[in-house]
Image (cartoon, rainbow, N blue to C red; front, side, top):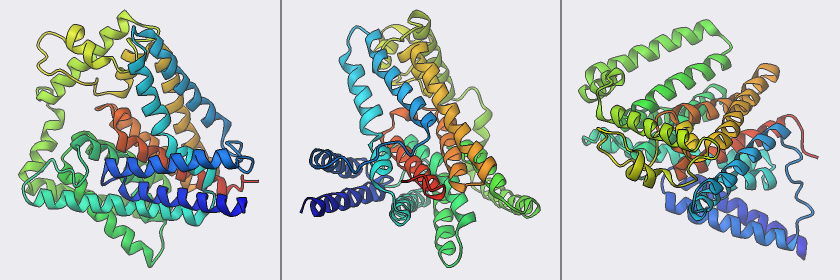
Length: 394
């Protein structure tokens, strides 16, 4: 009787994760509801039966160690501020709640078919949102978002997911390949109409890197890349709005570039005044406005528009060192796995993380709920697929 109940709860958690996957690129609210239900069911399951959950013993110890170290540093950096409550809230949101897709998948989803279903639903969600962005773009909105709210949120989603979609196209066989390729074209259209320059550069860099590494015939790859670049260049040359956005990438006088530099300067001054633990989690916004806003800055920034500068300001050295180690180890683990064993999921994990890092140089994507929940979900799918391929499960 107990076993039957546990099986039903596991299945219900999987269905909730399906809901998270399907809504992750469409509605932050819906994804939060499904994730909340999954977490509630998970803790109920733990209360009833926990001895059949193997924990993280099958996960690389380095991944667990650097992630745990960073999360602990964020928790303790809250002590660097006069009020700990804002920091605790940030910690629970960014380091517990948004990471739950990773934990749930790693602990409970160990069948390749279920992992593939979750990945397919994420792709469907991304494709639908991109189709909505194309619709908005056709009607004159060249900063399109689709159904999801937030220009930079959508750009962050594209930055981490589109390179993985390219890898999927390269690895998928007929007849599924044509459907995945159709999704790629739609998502690429969504990227163009989103109009975020940092996303364009991130997707370009990461996509070229991972697809070049994954290609078996380098000559065909180079020839195909030339054709693609020529077509994209033709599109930009004939759409004035896209051409203007592209030309402004190197312009240091744009308002967004100037305000970002001011935000970085404010973050640096916070770090100089509080080098060890920073000003505390969740305090950048109020302190920038009240004390650290440079002369000439016009906007009251909510964050530093850069992951590294934000962490440096709010967590100091105590947060920056663990965060940097975590990101470097994630990259090392992914690309090393590809070099050693040619495991495509290792390459996908490395590309996923590189996309997060590069996009995070122009915005604080660690604070974007939709982006980070998607990142941890995709990371879990990659890691779990690696484990299945390497037969690490007992």
